[in-house]
Image (cartoon, rainbow, N blue to C red; front, side, top):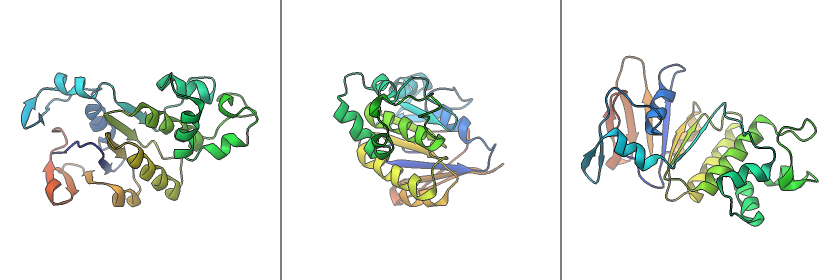
Length: 212
């Protein structure tokens, strides 16, 4: 079983096509599994109750791209009352502030204009800035840092963990370096139970179709 605790980072890994995305869809409350076991304060809860708990969460996948027209519009979509200073602070947290400082439009930099288009890695950073502004109870990052190099990925995840002390971070990544940041590591292997490792209080095992 997994323990979803505020301020902790859970790493989910495994071969491609093994079911990682299916599992995180369940954890995000987006898909109902065949078997679901969960407890809150030692009391069992059903999937509907669990989904209600996490419905204000954040979900960023590898292929998600912002539909808004500008950086400001993208960030204000999740934090409509945020000041420009707060927006810039979130961008600095994910390492995107220097890129926008070089743009004459700053926060109004267009996202889909050929002359100012952000790279794949920069778009991922922008979506992670959204997560910081949202301050969700649960944040699922399904290969959401795949376009960053290893050092940049680790730096962003360290910052996310620091800036989201009340958020459970669930990270899907193939890179072994993320293990050092994780409070729990779940590896899914074909035809075998998923293995979960963490500190002494969190060592446990779970089958792939069961979460709790």
